[in-house]
Length: 85
Image (cartoon, rainbow, N blue to C red; front, side, top):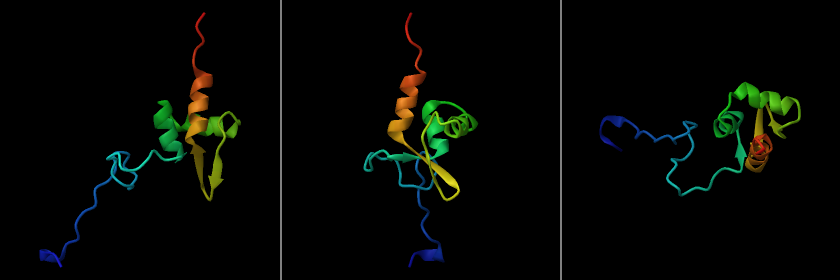
């Protein structure tokens, strides 16, 4: 037992979600939360919810939360790109 009876603190990942630290040892997650998808797309999470609700962005509702495949987020980003004239 350590002195003082305190538990060692666990470091948090750079995303702040309590997952493992982002040291490159773990692959990118296949499923993203709405917040992670919004950060990836650099848009507000309300916009991501709107895209899910209107069918623009496919998502699975697991319990009370949505999960989005990374490939679907990347496909949306490609569709939103401005076409050159």
